[in-house]
Image 1 (cartoon, rainbow, N blue to C red):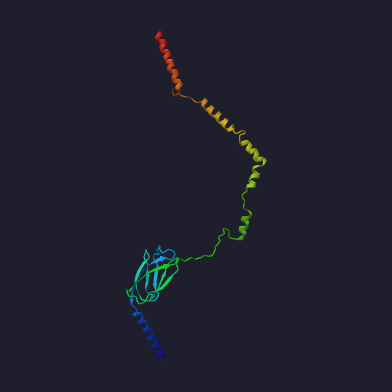
Image 2: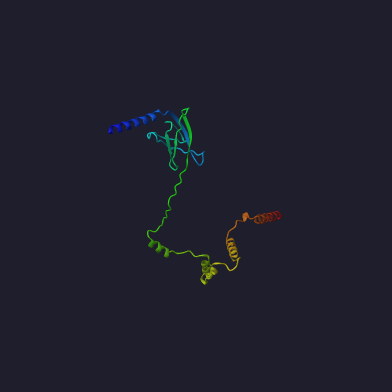
Length: 208
């Protein structure tokens, strides 16, 4: 009885193998695209023939692939960041060539929320929180600026009148100019006076 089951199993395996080898060969070609935008190419896609479990291919940098397979082979396309796509090749192909555009859907993975805290324990957080210095708001800043000490400091540093700073600057400029030495040759009025003196001296010499 055991031999009978063994013979039957062997016949079924040989029949399945014969049916598989009898399937005609086809040239399978195509381009891998992004399903959300057909113009976007997905390069370097892994292509596995699940029927044979031995044929593994990869598309090039332009997403193009081409290899020989059997009719009705199951082909799986996979790439990082995309959901895998599995297709079954057509049967009874007259041209012995199959061309398909493979559309890969981008894979969206929602990661769990992870919160990073700079404190190792809650006690350290409580200690830093209690010792934290909070910045003053506008009301507190205005209250500090209106204290008597702040007003006295402003009175000592600010001029009493709006033009006081300008007068001090004018006084400084006048003081600097009064002690500076100017070149008389650069003064046109000095040139005029010099010419008149020379003319007056020539006239006096001519009279003598």
